[in-house]
Image 1 (tube, rainbow, N blue to C red):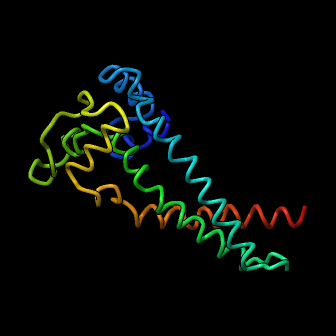
Image 2 (image 1 turned 120 degrees about the vertical axis):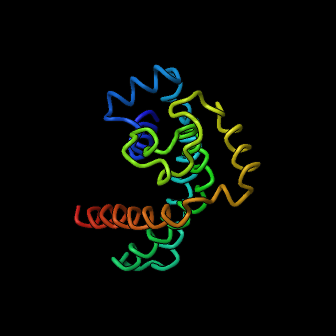
Length: 180
């Protein structure tokens, strides 16, 4: 949603803060810039949740076989669930991120604090009008410029961040459920 888009752009160093980001985005790209990635965000969160919960339940049932759910089984099942869900939805996340950050120059070219020779890809103008307006156009753009492998950029960091997050949240949930 809008906060995720703003977060992505703030992380890239393009705005001084939340208010500056919102006002600049709306002024330069219109209000739609805050919601451009919303449909693909929904389209990725739903399968992510389905894969994550389904995988977690499958492994819990396979490894428990009627016995008590142990901490080890919970941790292993939820870790695999986080890995599988994050890996399978990486292409959708890549499309979402492309929609959110397209046309942005590197932060070093915006701030002027880095010498031009040390700032990569300084062509283009920061905060320009978007190249693509929807997820389909973004997917086609990624495919034509980067090939199928482009949909899996960021796969390893996504897996490395989601796997422990899912393991921690599901293990906490299962542990709390047992004590309640």
